Amino acid sequence: MPHTVLMAEPRGFCAGVVRAIDVLDQILDREQGPVYAFHEIVHNRYVVDRFRERGAVFVDTIEEIPEGSRVVFSAHGVSPQVVAAARERSLKIVDATCPLVTKVHLETKKAAKDGFDILLVGHEGHDEVEGTKGEAPDRTKVVDRPADVQALGSLDRPVFVVTQTTLSVDDTRATIDAIRERFPEAEIRNDICYATTNRQAAVREIASRADLVIVVGSANSSNSVRLAEVAKTMGTPAYRVDGIEEIDPAWYEGVGVVGLTAGASVPDELLEPIIEDLKARGVTSVEPVIVATETLEFRMPQELASS
Ligand code: SF4
Image 1 (cartoon, rainbow, N blue to C red):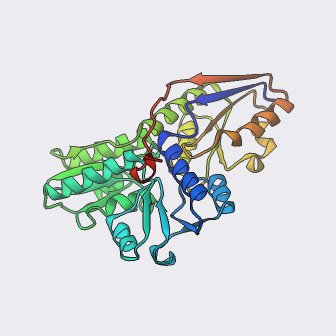
Image 2 (cartoon, rainbow, N blue to C red; image 1 turned 90 degrees about the vertical axis):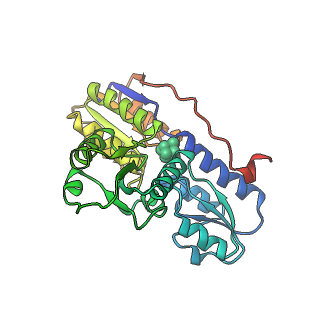
């Protein structure tokens, strides 16, 4: 049975998620009427449920929000079309988009203005990809893997490449190599963020030393899903769970060392019951495995910064 837990560091909340949660938290504290959030504020079931209990209303279309209401845009960002629709309904907007996502929007918008066709490496349908694509919908094609690049028709203009922020570092390298091969002159920005990169490096490290890796994070959290995939590429069995209730104790059979990590939208308190349970099963050592130290903090949006 397990005797050791290796804790990936960094893991859990990134600066963009902390900021988005603080934004919604402050608004719920100060506003009387209902507060709407366009899309899940961050992709974590636990976080979203806690906000729902406090009165936040999560919607997937702007039309669901009564005119003049307060709306918060999630950390994943929104397209200019969504902003326009919100303004048309006279919504009071607070934008909790992660500044690193905003940077990708700005790159995309400028590239379109400068006459490029844009290849957006990312997962079609993900909130962040929808938002970025909306900056230049007629010029942008989403590619997820090398085969998508090979399947592209010819492009009329020079090519500019941006990426979703939460992709697998290794898979993205392969897709970008395929783009370079087809479009050798392409201008390439790799926008995978520091938090995604560090969490993947940390999970790779614990996976190399563990018999089993558990990743805490929701199924719609791109970066959490990627963490489990990265662990598996090291040949280590890995499971993504929302919390302890989804862990099957049979996974621990024959396992001495358990690696534990969490996606960027996951509060650390969700890991505590898992660690306590492992201690009750015989774990005597809980060791941090540190691959990077993060100090980045983002300023609050202007609407809230002065308060
Ligand atoms: Fe921002 Fe990266 Fe966190 Fe996404 S994962 S919110 S891009 S810091």
